[in-house]
Length: 93
Image (cartoon, rainbow, N blue to C red; front, side):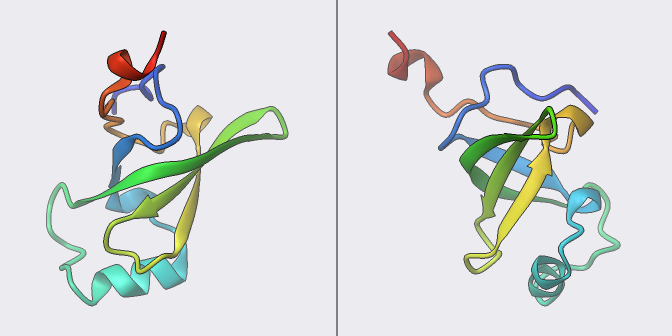
């Protein structure tokens, strides 16, 4: 898995692999629409917050298909597999 994009900030589109969906509520919602055995299954969303807890960078992720439920993922464990910079170069000075 590639490392987390160093430019990852709040309000950036991301893709999260199914193996990192550990929240039971979110997983139940996604199982209603997807076959969990599908290879390379991942879900689109965006970062909505960034924080540090116990020396680790955490991101709150709002998945497009999770009906408002928020995932909390740890950057140090490479839980965000394909952070895609939406338009970072035009938003920075």
